Length: 460
View 1: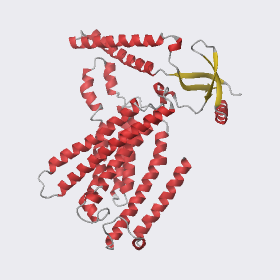
View 2 (view 1 turned 90 degrees about the horizontal axis):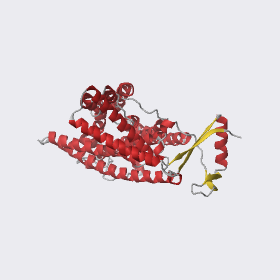
View 3 (view 1 turned 120 degrees about the vertical axis):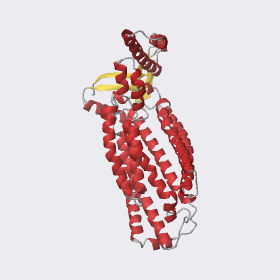
């Protein structure tokens, strides 16, 4: 029989935990004010600020005391999650196996209302727990159904935002390219500036709201799950925007056959848009925004550090914290890999661009992990597992799919078989398959589909 050391049941103490964290932050602020007052008399503004901190700290302390001194029958209920510690791994495995065979159990629980011991029929589900640093303790009280419902709501909101942002980006990209190709236009600089501003704001709409939704609404109970979901959502949004902007020129071009990757698509905005979608990430976002951190850490070091009241406070500014560092870096990496592989058939320069990005990322991540940020939470392999087993097979499929269509459409144009419709007869397809390029692209498409299916199924 399996022997266990201890069993700890989590309570629904979300409010209590949040108050304790706020109290800790306020105590740290008050500590800085006391250090500053010990060095020199405080000015009127800092005296008023310290009085506000003390008042808030007193109110929060009263709330915490009230929660701790509640009657037994009014205390937080069980969150429905427990943690059991065993002496030996074999005992833990035997217990999990037994619960999987028979999850229905009867627990003898003591009633809080003076009713004695009562039997409660429950269904227990056992799993290997994550490390304590990966548990979001304040969210344990939310059931699986509640978390799934919240995730669907968030995904629906993000999909709506993504649709609006993608539409705006596609429209302004087409306007900018049309104005750039117009040799008689005198407003090229102005058009480029305001369209760039719209693209930045459209991206910020997702990048600012998605982390907030994940932290304050979704209520995930594991940090690595939240990181993986956030990285996948941002990767999807980035790719949708980039592909939509490039593919829109299939139908907005004024010459050539609409809906086809013909020469007119390359020369009338398609090629320019495809390449420009990654140049900013490689040569601006990666080295300056992610590497030098010009919009957050650099500003904090320049403006906030000189105003610090104590050396410890200044150290906290310089040793910045960024709990979202890993998912944001992962989504940018996945965008480059998927986008670069997808278009590399027609634009082989993407192999070089992706290589440049990866080489620069080594330096950027060494700086971010070893010099700029502290306390990066050690994550599990879930985010990397999703990248390898889901995203990369999809990238291979996109590469072969776009490669086939581009080779097929180019061969149709060379044979003079392009027409206004998107569908062609089997005779035309058979004729184009005689081309070695089209035949090879078609074979690679079939192979990649079979490989992705087997690969994902095997790792599933």
